[in-house]
Amino acid sequence: MIRRCLPWPDPRLRTRAAPVEAVTDDIHAVWADMIDTMEAMPGVGLAAPQIGVMLRLAVVDASDTRGQAVRMANPEVLHASVQLRPHEEASPNLPGVSATIERPRAVTVRFMNERGETEERDFVGLWATSVQHQIDHLDGRMYFDRLSKVKRDMLLRRAKKAAG
View 1 (cartoon, rainbow, N blue to C red):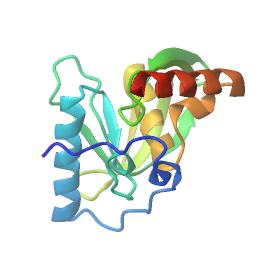
View 2: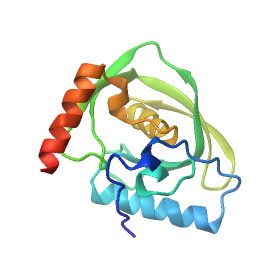
View 3: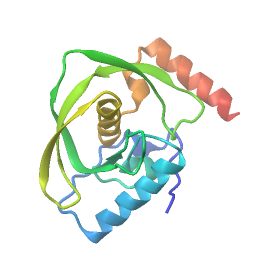
View 4: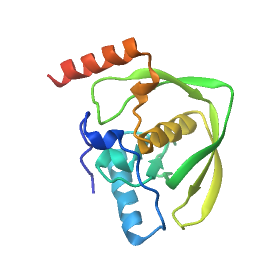
């Protein structure tokens, strides 16, 4: 089921999501809705708080073919590369605007997978960018928080104008 993304500045987008205790049928249902929502955008990732579910859940699919979504509960970056990679980032919570953000090119992430097992996986390129973007959402941060105050204010003004 495609879920509605919360519109900025909904306070839930600034709230740290709660840890997931166990992977249950309910968690699988939320992940399924998140993947449907991500595919409909279309996007390369989605965090549960973006659709109003305040749990540390994320999905990422930066594959060319789609259908390769990685389901993550409680993702955390264990290691990040020194080399940065710029990428144009946006969010369905603040449509109509985007900004170039520099993030580590590669990250090692530990998370609970769809079987409820702890997994460590390396992500590179767009996969790494998307995973980090989703973890920011889980921590109550938006991509534009990584901009200077001047650039952030300009972006928020453009978004307000675009929303009309």
